[in-house]
Amino acid sequence: MKKFFLVILLIGLASLAEAQGGFCLGPKIGYNSNTLSSNLDSIKAGINNSLQIGAFVRVGKKLYLQPEANYQTVSGTFNQGSGANALSQDYTLKSIKVPVLIGFKLIDKAGVNLRLMAGPAFTFSLDKKLNPSSMGELWPIQSADDFKNSSWSAQMGAGIDVLFLTLDLRYEIGIENIYGGSGSAEIKNNMFNISLGIKFL
Image (cartoon, rainbow, N blue to C red; front, side):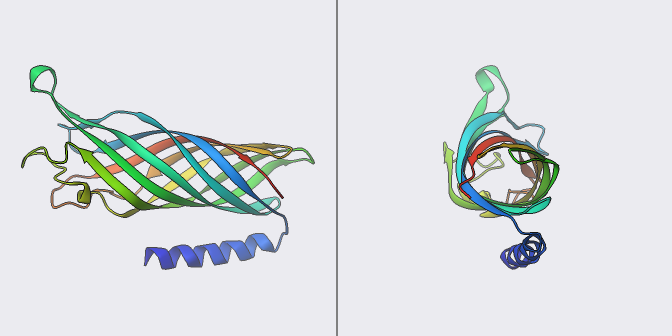
């Protein structure tokens, strides 16, 4: 159902942007700073930094559509307690993220433009790992399979283009619980991203 909704959204928005003309695409590389938020007071997850790499397509002029496909790795540590009684578990989530953004150019000159953008992002999990893989019956994350294979989030931000370079600053809010285990945990991924791309066309 999620994939069907994403396809319909892409078709509809692409038709809207195509009516204005304008097209470019290219590769991009980005820096992520992410943290997992949880409703469990006893377990904390710290901020972690990582890279992402992918590609984008932009269709439209003043109003534009920008779908992307980015490979990213999200990792960090769940912590409980402190001192001699401290427990910790490392997590690594590798995935493909597909944002579908609607943007508007506030400034649109020949060599420079300033943009605002927002839209949904869909994440497909490729690999999930925990170290150690098991922490005991009372630990909320019993296995890597407790993380869902897909999830929705929302991105918003601003960007600037100078000649063939395109720079974006975005904040991503997790809107769906990525925990799919049998417990009552609610875990969401929130992320700050800065990326640099090259427009080929």
